[in-house]
Amino acid sequence: MEMKIHHLGYAVSSIEKSMPVFEVLGWKARNGITDDGPRKVRIAFLEKEGQLLELVAPLGDDSPVHQALKQNKGVPTPYHICYEVESLDAARIELKQKGFMPFIPASPAPAIEDRNVEWFFALNLGIIELVEREKRG
Image (tube, rainbow, N blue to C red; front, side):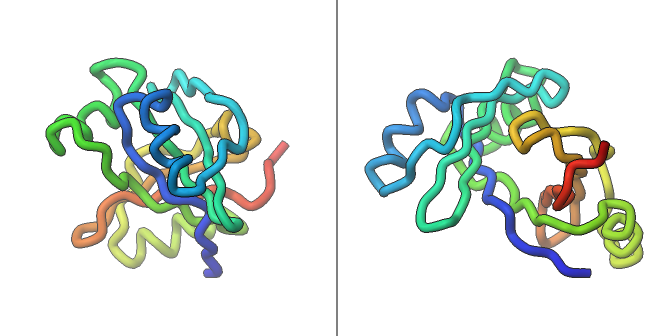
C-alpha cells in the first residue's frame, strides 16, 4: 500500500491565536478556517515549502481535540499524521491486519475538498488519519 504524508495535524486551543506564531516560522495560511461540525473541530491549513500543517481547534468541550489539549495541560501539540491513500477500503483492510484499530468511520472532510477520511489508532504510534487521493462521487 502506497501512503504519502498529506499533513501533520496540530491541536491548538485557538486557531486565531496560534496562526500568527506559525506565520513567524514561515507558514502561510492556505485557505480560511473551516468548521467541521460532525467532528466538532475548527480547521485551518498552513503551507510551507510544499508541506501542509493542519491547525485543529475544538468546537466545544465534547471535541476529541479538547480532550487531547486537556491531557497536555492546554499546550498545543502535534495531534496526528494524515496519509494520502488511493483507496480507504484497501488501506483499512491492510491496516486492520497489521493491528491498527479504526475508530472514526470514513466520511467526507469539508476542509479537504470533501474527500473521504478515516481515523485509526495503533499502540506505540497513536492516531493517524487517512485521506483518499480522489473525491468519490
